[in-house]
Image (cartoon, rainbow, N blue to C red):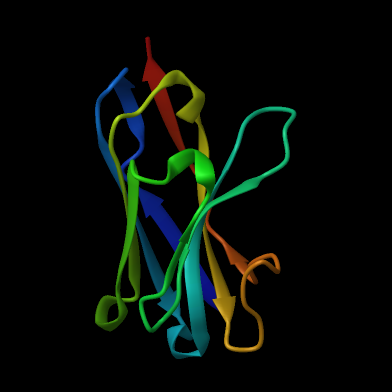
Length: 121
């Protein structure tokens, strides 16, 4: 099994920045891609960004040019640097990870507990 723990959420003003981190533990050698999703109440969970073990990245159109995903394989962590935040970025952000048997756009095999990001206008 793999456990994912997110950190770094919080309250930020419009135009500000936040950095989210996700640390994986357990059987991490089976992991391929890792990434971030977000979900607002009543909405479906949507993909924000993904990164493969080799470093290939993919972003939702709404965050391109503002968010940067990075990964430290040796530490089994994935980070999301979020700049130029606006009110539409207010959501609960979830870390996700895929085993070597699956890859995006399939849903992740493992999820973190979520971290709240709130952007005040």
